[in-house]
Image (cartoon, rainbow, N blue to C red):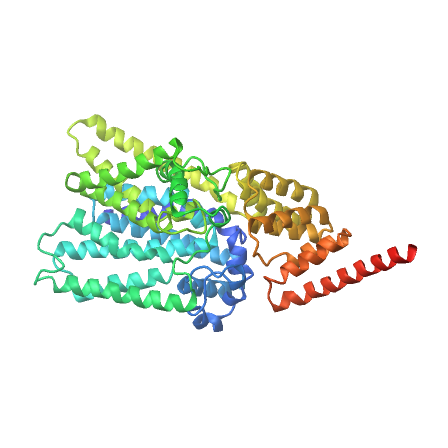
Length: 553
């Protein structure tokens, strides 16, 4: 017979298992293809030590991030299964179950058993998590949430017993280091613990500068040391401290920090909806699905109101409802590094970035359930139980249904254009898929045209489309796109040879020659040889024409 105190975490684990188990037979999908399947660096055990000196994304694909621990995990799973994706999906499932139980365990340090179970159960079935649990690269998000949920839970328990001991500090710092090596946003742990001190702990005698607070100072020093070592190592591997190649929209529209923040204010209502009641999900959010305002506009007001309101509510509830206040701080602090409000990220909105912030949401839900459960009137208690039951059932059904979207790239990209038909990247990505995997050139061209019509300012996209046109022998549209791309950003090196080659094939020799000379100003040595040959070809062609013209006269 199962002990009652073990029944709660067991049911949370079973809910998490139910939402993820259908992914076991899925393939490598979307980023999995580039980060795992086609990435030789994670295919051999002998490479593991080297991973601690390499970027997460392959250098030829931008070299984003520093996540050696998750890359090590990919390597172990890839080798164990001989590259079979089901082994890595099994890893996702086990991590998802462990993370849900860790969230329950963390909540149990803050809430009575019933409220903690509500938090764990809602986390286990939250539909916005499917992008993380269904996509293999989501293991980085799973590891961070797992390590930090355990760290916060352990810290709160230790602090409620009294001052933090050296062993407790070592556990918290060790989990912090492991989380940092899994993904960058783990950097928020010290801020979360400060929020915990201000809300759910509130020990007046544990002040950083008080004589009796030596352990607090040592812990702060430990956090500083771990962070400094991590940032130093990271800086030797990746020059960009933020860890992102900025989203193309930010670069090619030359958006200032103010422009970027204004745009994110239009996205905040969507982010709130995804965290609280995610009825509509998508693997991509890009223009024209995303609004890009021009200066201050009324469309930004709801986002501003939500941000100010959440901050004010977190402050107001600090004494009245400390767990709810802590949950609000958890949402704000954990989302801030990926919010585009501080630095430009490699995306506008991404569901995977809401995985860790959602812990704060379910803590608030658990606190709200406990408040209703303890009301003297029966009706609120029954309403609370019924609401939780409905939300768990709805979340379970939606998550199971959503898992099918991540089965393989064909299913994913087909669903993507249905989820966000106004997103330019959805059509661009589907165009690449149907053209590359199935050679459906007509369908590819239609998708590319839709993407360009929706948003022509992503030069990285127009260069890829132009390259595909060149490969298919369709020089006129390739030239048009390349000419447009270079007018947006003149110093681009990509596509220079294709541009010159297509102009030559179209008989535009003088323009081909000028384009080759212009390209030589930007390209490296390897590309310059081809451009010089094109200059010689253009000179030869123009010379023959001149000779023939003179001869006929």
